[in-house]
Length: 177
Image (cartoon, rainbow, N blue to C red; front, side, top):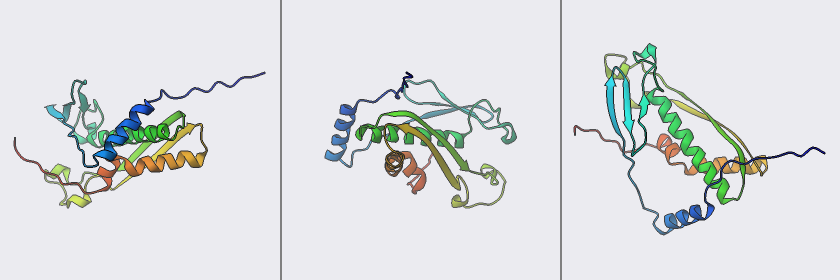
């Protein structure tokens, strides 16, 4: 007799999740502030410091005059989106008591830089620059039907802070320190 062994991804604390959700219901206008300190090393390589974590290294590929030592800024944005969607999918699955055995996200974004960062390239308006389309494919397995897993993914997408930042205009300011 053959026995199939199924392993599940490391779970999150469901009780903690429920308590966190209750805090949100009790104070729906609560906000926190994410802070990052970015330092340029030279050429286009930068180090972004977030709390006590190791620096997040960002660079540009050789064809964009970088050293190709790390992901490009747009790839970091997609990484943030993948991480946020993954967190949301895990949270919704936990809420619904669905155990996940696999969760992978494949992200693509169409982006160009004919304006050359505003350094003499093509004249463009802000809406013409940046990502023009973002696509995400989710590979998900767990102890639920495909329809239930799809509903978890769609629900998490609807509530994803990073996905909503990409989808919706956000007030933005920049000034000298």
